[in-house]
Length: 464
Image 1 (cartoon, rainbow, N blue to C red):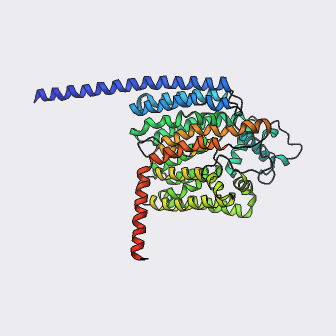
Image 2: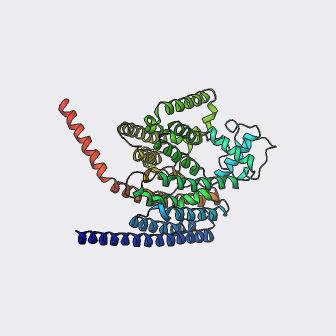
Image 3: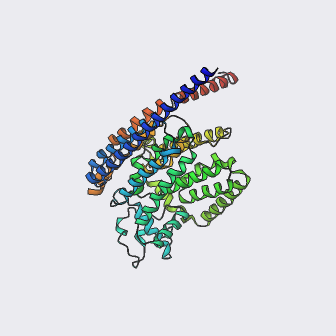
């Protein structure tokens, strides 16, 4: 008996030693990977200046992106635990990368200037929903005004976003504050997402935290998606901890910052509880009434939704087939609504928070809408990392290939010609859809079988 106990103790000691060895080896690889990623970002900045109007920017981007892919593969192999060293290392390198990107001149997007100026308009008593930036009074001068695209369109952003812009503009009359706030939001969203991930899935944090695209779109592109994602993660944490009233308020806040989160509300509705549902209903009723009395609140949004067309995938195919932009949008919208209803019905039977279904809804929304900017992928990534043990390689690869959508600016920034190349869409979407169909082949086959079974039953009820 004593010998048997010694044997098991010895075996357990060996296993513990092997685990420690793997953890040590994994931590060293993580540190090396972080250093290489940081160095590659520095090379990207120094060689290209993050100039979106050059092909070299798109090509050199794949240096940090390739390192990012290798980091994911190695981290997946060791499945590192955040309890000891993983989270601090991930956050440290994410922080350092953001600091470096913040030092660059804004080149990837002019949206930040619209944020800043609409905030200034509000502070000066001008209504961004009634007055466009190219119709501001002559005394409203700003060096950033000529830098804004589509300045003839009134604000497309919800009221809380305008209030946020106004507060930041009031605190410091420099767009740099916006960039700093969004970068801090990105870092905090990484820490918050770690709290949501299951212990066995925590190694997937690098998929979100070290994605080069997200770092560029936050620190240089300066989009406030990171802030919205932070609030969504905060709402999910509150749902997990049954703080339903606070979760409802936070979800309302995400909607009043950017409207797309409205598609998530039905998924989480029953989990908000009566108190949370009451809070959300009152907030939405008040806002709908406000829109009814002031339609100008969504005039800019409807203009963008009706006229804007960029980097579309499904709608582009439908448009090529139908030669009608309206019909293409109608078909895509109908597909989205049908699938949305099916998913919402299935989610009601789901015991846990339906992260997987949330990812499906947001993913479909991105693929079926007429405009797909690179930073929109921010909305999706937290959800596709929270459920399955598998890595969503299709979306990860797309987060790299989507950098080619910037190819349109090569002509636009130089000769003011907007021309989207078919080759760019092929490069972006053929690998993505191929991988996506392969990853979800079992689910697709299952749904086909269910549909066949349903049709066979219908034939039995109504024989031809």
